[in-house]
Image (tube, rainbow, N blue to C red; front, side, top):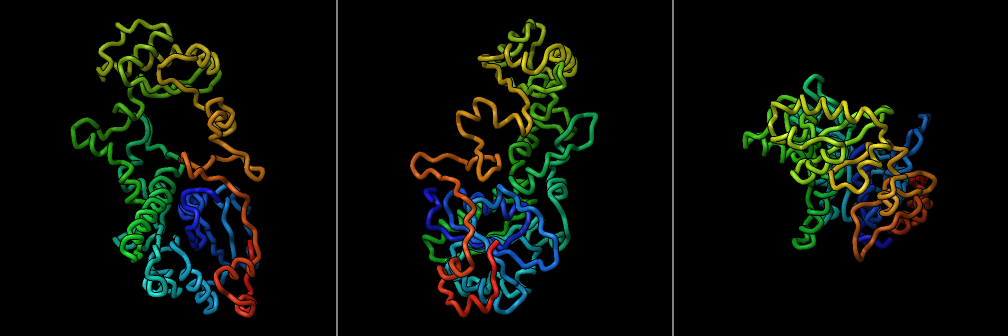
Length: 373
C-alpha cells in the first residue's frame, strides 16, 4: 500500500452504512483495516458489497464469548484506531467499551458512529439517514415549492455527515495522539454531521438571505439559472450559471436575448423565466443540447445516471471510476502528488495468518475457532 495512511492499523467492528464507509476511506488511503465480523449461524448471508469492503481483511469473532472479547482487546492493544457503530451502551455490555480498550491501549482512538450521538433524549432510539437529516433542517430544505421534502438518497446523513465525518474525527484524534501520547473517544453523530454540512445554509439564513420555504432560494432550484431541465428525450440537463458572465453565456448559447432576462436576481421573475427556459430545453434532446453547449463556459452539464457517468470523457480522463474485481466503482479520493493510494484486491487471509501478526499463538487461535470472510 502506498497511500498516506500506510502503517496505520484500524479495527472495524463490522456494522452497516457509515461505519464501513469510514473504514473504506481509511483503507483507500493505505490503512490496514481489519474487520471483525460477528458469526451468523443459520442466517442467510447477504451478498457482500464489492466496494466498501475493498482493501480490507476480515475475521469472524464471537463478541459475546469471553475468548472473543479477549481477542478483540488484544487486537485493540496493537491498533491505532477502532470503529464501532452500535447503539450507545452495546460495546460496554460486551466488555469492549472505550474505558476498557483505552486502559489496554492508552493511545487508541475509539471512533463511535451513531445517528443520534452518545447522549441526548433520542440516543437510545432507532433511526436511519432520513430521520437524522429531518431533525437538522436539511431534509426540509430539499425540494420544490409544490413538493414535499425530497429524499437525497442517504448521502447527507449516512455518508457525508456520518462516515466521512467519523473519518475526519479519527484522523484529527490520531494527530493529537501523536503529540500527547493519549487516545480518546470520537463521538460522531449523524445529526451533528448533517447539521455541520448545513453551515453555509444556516449562515445565509442568519444573514436574511435564505427563506425556509422550499424552492424559493438561489441554490434550491428556484432560480432559472440554477436548476435542472427536462429535454425532448426525457433526459435532463443541469445549469448553474450564477455569475453574470456565465449567465450571459448560457442565455446566448440557447438563443435568448439577455436584456429580456435582467436583472438576473429579480426573484419575482424567476418562475416566468424558468418556464421559458423549460420550454426551450424541451425542444431538443439532451445530447443535442450538449453539442450546442460544447465548449461554452456556462456552467452546463448533462445529468448522467450510474451507467453513463463512468463513460463521460472527463471522468475517463481522470480515472474517476475504476473497474476493481469485476465491479465498476468510484476511485479513492482525494488525489495526492506523492503518496498516491492504490486499490488492492480484497485481502483474504487465514485467521492464523492475520492473528499471527498480532502475536496470537496456534493454540490461542485454535481455541477461538475463527474464520476468514
